[in-house]
Structure formats: C-alpha cells, structure tokens
Length: 152
Image 1 (cartoon, rainbow, N blue to C red):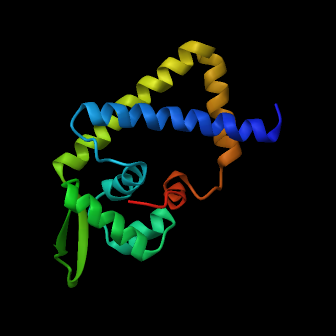
Image 2 (cartoon, rainbow, N blue to C red):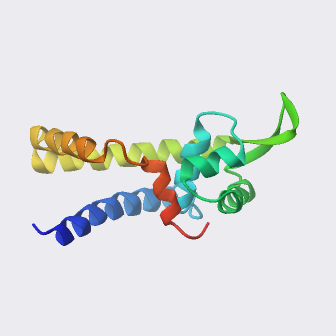
C-alpha cells in the first residue's frame, strides 16, 4: 500500500465512523449536530470550561471556538454560566441534550469498532489499535483535529 492509499484508507475509516454516528444522531432527534460540534462537546464534557480553554483543546482561535460554542448554546447542547470564583468569567457546560449526543455517539462508535473487530478478527484488530497508538503518540490529540473543520 502506498502512503497515499494509506491516507485515503484512514480517512475512509474515519468518514465511515462519522457518517454512522451522524446518521444515528439524526434518527434520534439530533439532525443539526456537525462533526465540529462533537469535538467541542468532548472539550466541554469534563466540566465547566472557559471558551479560551475550549479553543486551546480544539487547536482553534478563540473566535472560532466562540462561534462553535454559540451554535451549541443556540441548539441547546451547552449553556453558559457564571464562574462562582470570578464574576468576569463565563463558563460553558453541557446540557442534558449535549450529554445525550455524547452517549449516542459513544454507543455508535463502539458498535462500529466491534463490527470491525469481527470482520478482521479480534487479535488483528487489537494489533491495529496498538499500532495506531504507537504511531500517534505525542501528537496533538484527537480534539485538535477539530481545527480542520471550518464551519460550525
């Protein structure tokens, strides 16, 4: 396999996962969720976070993060709250609707992973996962990939 083919195979696998996830989200009442929203929801999931922290986690500008967060708030997936420790800061938290999107997404991704493991065999799939971990160690991390998505 050439380097070019490898890139397209990895991209194809990623696209298959994302498409399956978004098809299921649409079926379950979330047709307006986009890939960039998923990255942002993951960035918020750990707890109350500032817009600047979301920007840093996603590897995007504060303005881009703010636009994405505005979209999540408008759609009811996140909300802005005051910071009890600093009245000047605004924090972003997930709403129950945002947590539901993450739970549905996790379920779909696990089902796709299990299907792929069945297709190639559990040992070969475990070796693939180990190889991918080794090859991507020290990288920017999965949330930083959100910077590749231009629109919110």
